[in-house]
Image 1 (spheres, rainbow, N blue to C red):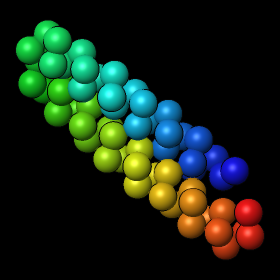
Image 2 (cartoon, rainbow, N blue to C red; image 1 turned 90 degrees about the vertical axis):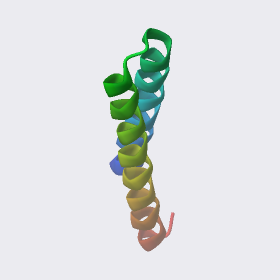
Image 3 (cartoon, rainbow, N blue to C red; image 1 turned 135 degrees about the horizontal axis):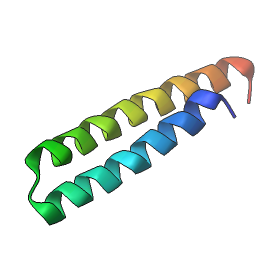
Amino acid sequence: MDKDRVEGSATNIGGKIKEGAGKMTGDEKLKSEGIADQVKGSIQNAVGSIKDAFKGK
C-alpha cells in the first residue's frame, strides 16, 4: 500500500472530525476546513491508488 493512501485516509478522517466539531460548535470556519481536508485526503488517496495500480498491487 502506498504511503499516499495511508496519509490520504488519515487526512480524510481528520477532516471528518473537524467538520463534526465545527457543526457541533457552530464554527463555520472549522467546518469548512474539515470539508477541505476531506477533499485533500480523497485526492491523496486516489493518487496512492493510481501508484499502486502502476506497481501492480
